[in-house]
Every structure is written in structure tokens, then in C-alpha cells.
Image (cartoon, rainbow, N blue to C red; front, side):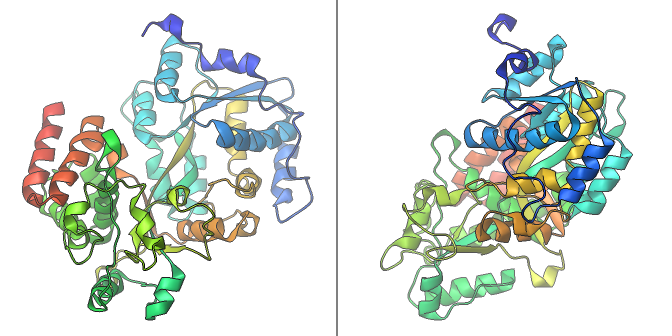
Length: 453
């Protein structure tokens, strides 16, 4: 596509007029459970009057409105003219702008791999050791988040380039409390308990799980989340990292073990609604519906925090349905790992305002404002942000899972090359769910990875 078909994010920002210093502030300073002291201290320390700060990211619709509300506080505190632009073609556009020398001050990356590639090409500015140290000290499982934003620069040396902000949780199991109560089931606290509960439900003549891998051209991706969670529950975080970069091959016995752990749940006819043969054929959006049937077709469904969008209309989380943390093995002593995703702020056009905005993200108020906006899926691992500011109990509980994590790892398939993570890993898991041998499938995925090198 030619350059003329694109307008740079910075140029759009100049005319968009999105989040200005004089924007209405959603929550009145001094009121509510917010940490206004942090806001006032930041305001006293930063004067950016007359400076424009441009921000480009993937958020549109309600998410765009929310981030603009957060940025309004930064603008109000500093006097800066802050402008955000969102695009559903962010990944392509940010690279075009960087190559043309017209990048925004700040880019918000939904994928660490793209940020790492831009750091390697010299398009990102390091955030500094002080920022990395702050994150290690103030985010739950802080070093995990520092590692997520640390990449090799143009000179080959590692530095902290990308500030994780706004997280999603994938390590969740959904269930209907009333169904559990009918049989006296308790929420399992360990993987051993979860497997025992699975077997108990079968012994009671019921079916424990609904699992669906269908997703059109992306069919298979829900199984990759299962395998990634199982990697974190059977191996150390270091092994997980080696797997996502192919430092250990995809057909390593430890990876095969994680695939087979998924198979323990998904390849048993007694464990899955419709039998194991239905797993690959069932659309992931339809698969949780069995929880709500009368009588229920299943009692548990593993999926990320976004899945309520596909529950029956009017379903109340915390009443009609609830969730629990997908537990770790007690016997493996690997802590409480959490699998998820998120976005990262990076400086793509250096300026005093760019660094000030990164500093602003280290204040509780920068998190609490978005936490408090109703209907928003903002979660943060920042332990200094007050959980009381979450707009509802569901988000508060999800946030607690994040802040209780001993390890956080980003979705592994998103860290892999596209041909693997969004290709052979997906299709291989469909084959495995259909009965193929785990080691054979893993070998084919490894071959595809080697073919990319």
C-alpha cells in the first residue's frame, strides 16, 4: 500500500481535537476514593503549558472515550495539550509513521512483539532504569511486567522500552453458583481439586465442561490459551519464555506435557458436553451457553474476562454466573501464575511531555480513573491503585486475581511469529482435539517454526 493512502497519526492528532487540557474531568478532584494526593503532587511537579503531546493507539469506541478521560487529567495537571487518536489499523500505521519520521509522541502497543521490533529498529526511546525499578516494586509480579517491556535496541543491548498499562485476565473458569449449590460443589483452590471436581461431576451423572475451539478463520485459538495456562502450571516462567521464543523447541517433552494436560480435559467424552468430538466443531462464542441450560449441559467453562459478552442477555455476573481463578498445582510449587494480555505505552517521538506522560502512568490516579468508569474492562496490576475505585465487584475480583499473581505472562501465541502463533499452533490444536498425537502435532508446529527461520 502506498504512503499516500495513509495520514500520519501525529497529523490526524493535530486536527482531531480529542483530549485537551481543558476537557471536562469525569470525577471531581477531591471527591471519591481516588488518590488525589498523587494527582496534586504530580501537578505541582510538572508544567508543560504550551506543549502538545500526541498519543496513538488501538482503542476506539468506549475504550477511546475512556483513555481520553484519563488523558484529560494529565492535561489538566500539566497544562499540556493532549491528543489521542485510535485506529483499527494501528499495527500497520505506527510502522508507516515511524519510517516516515512522523510518529506520535506516544504509541500504545497491543502486542509486545511489534514493540520489540520497533525497539530493535531504533524507533523507541528507552524509559530508563528508574521506571523499570518502579514497576518491579509497584506492580504485582512486577518483574514479569518489566520483562514484558524489555527489548534489545538498535545497538543490541536490552533496555526497558514499553510501560504495560491496562491488562486482561485469561486464567478464569466460569460457573453458575446455583448449579454448584445444587450438588454441594465447592470452588476448587488447586489444580488437583479441579481435576477431582471434574471426576466428581461425572460420577454424579453430569458433564463438567463446555469447550469450543471454533472461531472462523481463527479456529483453534481457545486451545492455545489452555496450553499456555498449562505451561505456566507445569513449568517455571523461564521455560515458558524459552518456549515462546523457540529457545526450546515446540516438541520439547515439557511442551508436549502441557498439550496433554489440555487433552486430559478436552479429549474425554465424559468430560465435555457433546463429547470430545464436539470440541473443535463448537464455536467458542456458543460454548458457554450450556452453563445456562435447564438442566445444565455443563458446569464449567474456561475463558477470558471478555466472555460475558456472549452470555444470555440480562445475565448478572456474581449472581447468575461467577468465575474463579484457574488454579495452579499445589504439588508443583509454582505460585499463582496468571495468563493474560494487555497494552504497552512507549515513546516513539521523544519530548519532555512524552516522559511526563510515562511518569503520570506511575500515579494511582492514572489507573483509578479508568477503573471507575462503568462498563469498562480496565484492570491493573498496580498495587498502589485503590481497588475501591473499581466500578463493580466483578472488576474488583478480577483485579484481585491480577494483584495476587506471583507470575504474569502474556498470551504466548501472540509472542510467537504470526505463522506459528496465529497459524500452525491454532490448526495443530484442532488436530489434537480431534485425536491426533500430541508429540506428532508438536513436531509439525516446530517444523513450521523452523521453516520461518
